[in-house]
Length: 303
Image (cartoon, rainbow, N blue to C red; front, side):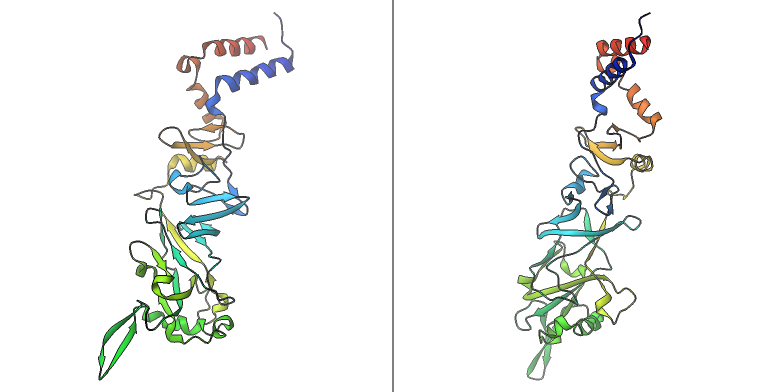
């Protein structure tokens, strides 16, 4: 029996594997992180990664994770996977350190996100004469009284914010400040400062245990997300991530695909046994690759 040289046999075996099983080769490598932010389902680093419903909203470019809506593109600062909360920042947002004008913020109505209950918006420099957040509440003698349509229980927040040097230098009356909770944004999830007749806003999601010290508040926006209607985490995706893979999707029906570090895709996980089962389901009598199967069998027989 003639024995093939190891180098030749290895080459032919590899050639056979890649030709016979092309569906196992990954056309898009999905990473498990973007910069310093770990990525898990439903998020991904590009097309074919994560959940297709989230791909158009959360993307990774040059190792920077960003969130996109019709109002702009915003950096993602962190993701709490246990609570299903994503935290973003808005460069046009005012904070205790800096006050600037802004157009506002809004979510796409069909996006798989909603505002977290901890998110608080504070509108700044709102017109007391033309802003719709003011309404005629009644009459007191000959004078009409105007009352803010804001969260009155959050009034102390405005007082604390006005202790910030950046805001105090503007010399704005505290009456032009309004605590605007996400529920007030309505079904369109829109905070249009131009329509609200306000020039700026501040958003935060935590007092950091220091309610009276706005310099240490967590400024940004907290967004909740759901996996699906029932909010069930796919079991197959959990198995994929436990084996070191990254969940993705592919095919006509965007079915789940496990992207493995070795560059192959499977429908389960990255363990050898599962990969072998995947290969066995693609044997030539199912794919019609009888010539390639014969070549592979010949190579293995001659080793």
